[in-house]
Length: 230
View (cartoon, rainbow, N blue to C red):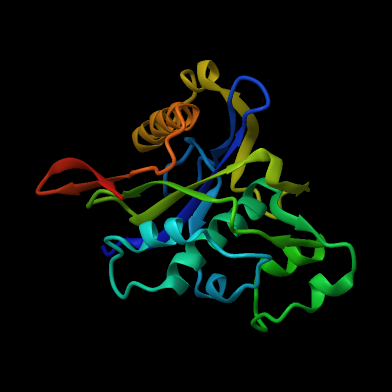
């Protein structure tokens, strides 16, 4: 099964001991039932055309293009980032962006059928891409019921423009968890690996490291690989 493009968002609250937003997937779901995960899901083509207040940092975009399967393009990279924001709104009710002070947000040029983005814009928030960091990437191993080529984005909680009731119920028990609490959650192995990457990123940022080499996880010939994209 060919992996589908997907994106997820790690929201970091660093006002005190670092905490991240996670929720438990419903037991009826085919992919990762009952597991605690970051909000996220499959990218849609419409995500590429959604207007935003600004764009991804050039360096983040260039990393997204490295080893991109199929036809690599800036539009796909942009769509992945926007997919992470859309899924976070749908599953967690958290809108990353800037509040609009007038009705102009409803008249932004966009495709006619924008799906869940219609609800996002009705909250008078414009999506914002520049604060997003490309933290990690993972491809679901072969043999799973569904396979995704997932990009993990990171954003600081200060960029939350608004929080509302989630439009869908894919995630239960939503909450902010610190490092100690995360140890006791039932999370997928790859999620735990990315949490460790996040801890390394926080430490690197504290040391003044400006550029982050993105860990990329995948299986090749039955072996789990971890390489760095930079």
